[in-house]
Length: 399
Ligand code: GCO
Ligand code: MG
Image (tube, rainbow, N blue to C red; front, side, top):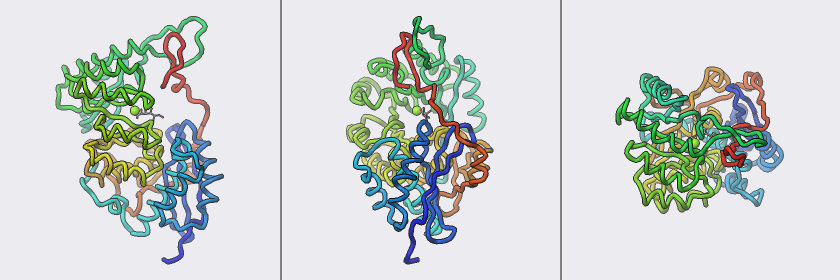
């Protein structure tokens, strides 16, 4: 097929599970040959849509979709300013779609193009939560009975949902008390280890909700409970503090879902200050950069734990799994579950069995999109409330 060009680039917004998802469809001059990519930045979905439709689409129409690397490089710098969440997600939507097309042209599932399988399926972790340690314990047991071996434990979501009385006159917001939250973390793992033992692998996501020195203290306090990893103990703006954590304890460290810029991960990896890279592939521009980041991590003994929450579309989840299967330094895959509605809108979703996620062997990413069904679940957009995090005295903080 000598002559092949991009005929159109469209954005499909849909929210089958109540979470706004952004998918890019790249159509080619070859009838019926198209690709899908995840560009989900759920808090700013409309901004990504505009970036794709107003800037990438006119640049891409007429180009050869097989030139993935050139299109990635030139699209990332076309805006001159780069490495930001909106534009990187826009580029990711296109990039993943081009890899999907490449797999269809080669008549191979994407993992084959990325070097083939290193394993049959990828182990996943699930999110257990509870209002108290007893409710959390029940939730952990439920997941264990379903065959999951890796479980993230939270008490009342990020920062904990312990009663907080804001100061009089305080502004509206999602209030939490960082000290009450910090003191609750060791109690979680003391209880779960006492009740369920040390076989089950456990994680916790601090979600950048404590001060840097408190993060150092917590990493030491949970050391006896042998966590699989402690996530986002620090915000990207304070990554230098990881050195202090490293010098004081051996709790494995996971970081990266908020990363957009290679400068954020380069020194953390070369200085071996983290054990798991938690990047959200669409936030860095898609499969092309994620594959390179995987290899960079491998050289420094860092494993992958790609971000896989509800605000990733099934196309993005599939991209994660193709990366997981084809990377020797795979660590674990976050799995937030895919509802029936989502499976209807996105035929070919990855499937979980006995705590592992499997991908189908269809060419490309293996996931399709029913646009008629997608239109039945319009996005809500709007200003998120949970990100309006505040301390009891009213201080606005990182969510
Ligand atoms: C996780 C994350 C998510 C993010 C969410 C932001 O570890 O899964 O922390 O829950 O908060 O994806 O929109
Ligand atoms: Mg997280």
